[in-house]
Amino acid sequence: MTFKSTRLFLAAAFLGASALTASAADFKPENPECIAPANPGGGWDFTCRQVGKSLQDLGLLDKTMQVVNLAGGGGGVAFAEVVNKRDDSNDLIVAASSATATRLAQGAYPGNTMDQVRWLASIGADYGVIAVAADSPINTLPELLDKIKADPASVSVAGGSAVGGWDHLKVLIAADAYGIDDVRTVKYIAFDGGGEAVTQLLAGSVQAFTGDISEAKGFVDSGDIKVIAVLAPERLDGEFADFPTAKEQGVDAIGANWRGFYAPGGMSEEAYDAWVQKISELYASDEWKKVMAANGLAPLDLQGPEFQEFVASSVQQIQDISKQIGIIK
Image (cartoon, rainbow, N blue to C red):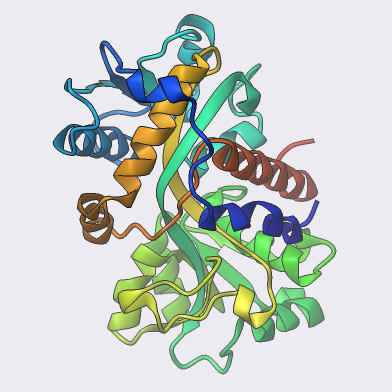
């Protein structure tokens, strides 16, 4: 499966929420709860706490959402808890992200699969970028990928995640979409964070950088790097509008470090539809647009079955690429 199949589910980003049952509007969680699968602080904790607060501020919840931090196994402890002990809860939602999809794809939650839960909705994304030093002769993503095709050893790409992690996968997704048959030829060098990776880029130790737009922006503003591709379905707004997408350069690659939620697999249809509706209304609100802007989140508007399909496609693609590079068998 190649990343060209993203056309099937990325169109969903421009669709509204799925049809809701009449009874969904009447559902009110008795004790709304959000599990953040990590310790306080960080993305999953932010997702639970900010969404819970905003849902109540907007009158979409009439009770305070309890946030429970359940760390361990990169989200695996929380996933197993939901599947094994909370499968029929109608009041529970769980924070998730592209890291969740990556770990599911790579078998990091032993015995568990994405189909054991129900995927509710996304609330935004931090899109991936591929960048080069400001003085690099490379100006476009196809130019970089052509150099990799012609002489893989001549191009090293730095990122702030481990081999097989999300930064690594983003550049492999682009290579796969461009027709590089064996993505193992892409030379990726892992560093402890995006800042160190950019430092090595500026030192000339590597020729390109793969990371998220939020961490790249400061280095663009300082004149140190130039973004040659954003892995988003269309150009972003505001201060990111000048950055070209991979797609507009003929490389159908999307790399969204998304944030969203899943729910227990046994949740009732009424409750599921109601939670989808609540998160959809939250996403459409002016209040949430301000939260996104303040926290560097870009648009990713997927709810219900469309989000389920998006996650399924992401898991499959990550799994395929992970097999190619030997992360999984």
